[in-house]
Length: 97
Image (cartoon, rainbow, N blue to C red; front, side, top):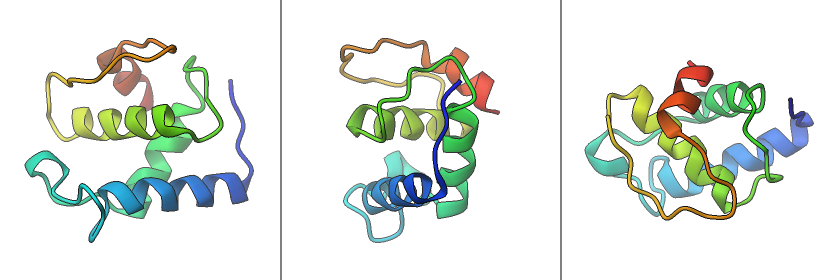
């Protein structure tokens, strides 16, 4: 299990929001409404309670949080470029629900 300080969580939520939130770089969020900070916060807090090896809020963490939010919105397959840390996004999303 991973732990995050409130400051680390707030920084990460802002980081993810800058990509997928309203006005963010990828704010269309694959055809869905932009994510909210509350959605990012909840998904992140749930994710760090799983077996996922938290990377300190890096880009891989951002993409996994994104993928978990997409699965929660009904996307049944997520394309990604596998990095060093591999994961099963559907299982991970189920753990964060």
